[in-house]
Amino acid sequence: MAGVDLRRRVEPGLVELILLRAEFLAQGDRALLEAYFRRGVPVEELAALEGRTGRAVRRRITVLCERVLDDMFVYVMRSRERFGTKRRRVAEAVYLWGLSRRVAAVRLGMSLYTVRRHCDVIEELARGAGVAA
Image 1 (tube, rainbow, N blue to C red):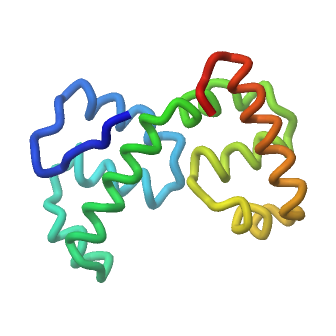
Image 2: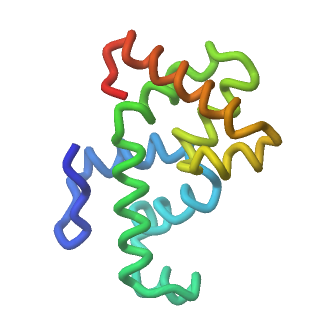
């Protein structure tokens, strides 16, 4: 999927879709998207609040938009209730919150091997559902 270009006006329908799906992001990521898209806070102000450059914040917003528009994000968002507890926690950490498998393993108190196996199963289920994993 093509990325969101923040140098141009983003279509209102796409903004609403991004904001709806942002509900499934980690709290800080959701707050960033809501501040930028819903409240119209300029990137420079967001950057000053976070102590980062405007370019870094712009890139973070773009990455978050790409994630919420990704097919795997949508699949996990819609299917996570069907997963067992451990698999759901892995799915949320990796596919919704964007953590690396290694960081997810540490935060979830699981081995990297276990997280990888759960990710393999989730991706296989997604392929079975017609999602390009």
